[in-house]
Image (cartoon, rainbow, N blue to C red; front, side, top):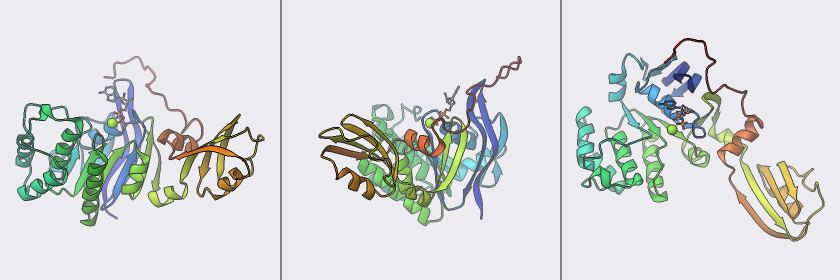
Length: 312
Ligand SMILES: Nc1ncnc2c1ncn2[C@@H]1O[C@H](COP(=O)(O)OP(=O)(O)O)[C@@H](O)[C@H]1O
Ligand SMILES: [Mg+2]
């Protein structure tokens, strides 16, 4: 199996502040790979290391079989990269911005680029400084996709996009997958990543926690249910309900974490007068708490111990 991205003990400290630590990652050719973690986990740091925009403190990264610190020019030519922050180029119009990137790359098909603009409803005639966050994001995506690169590295690609444009983005990723290209997507949104990705790496506090097949993640499918009873039910009514991982009862209200089918929970609830019920997907934080214990993975220091020397 060909590996498109490989990192070996990849570590980045900003001075003493932790970026990522000891990251071992493998992304296979042709897969859509999610890189999931809460804010500050180290996603952007990792992506910037892959593009050689910053240098590792230790460890190595290989993209398309090439060492990132030695072949960044070749890597970038064959990769589409959407940065997390698109603050530059404010004085250009969208078209100037896209032509600028097209010139850096061989064989950009202008017709394909126009199709991308139409599909994402981007108006390239406008000055970038006048665009909303979502419309800037569209230009960033078009820039990343326009040369049909064999590898896409996308930092929070749907942030700022409205739901219709998110769907169009999902179709673009699907097309890339069908063409056998590889997509690496960072996100803090688990439901979205579940929809698009084959595998997901969880990162927290700079460390890789787990890499899972999305299919197996779905089997763990968690829901948070909040029930308001018409009158307080007896305590402990969920104790032997299959699927209930945790239940906190407080008077008339119960907060319940369910895994898998809701059938048993609903049958338990049906024995009592229910006033109101809300069910939603748990936050990423809750998923982490459930999978990795209350304290998450073993504690990782946010800063390096002071060794007396100047590290930065
Ligand atoms: N330029 C920087 N200087 C110092 N610390 C940084 C810098 N960039 C990121 N960090 C720190 O590195 C950690 C990881 O950040 P980042 O990679 O941006 O996380 P994510 O993209 O997952 O939100 C955070 O604690 C952040 O504060
Ligand atoms: Mg980020």
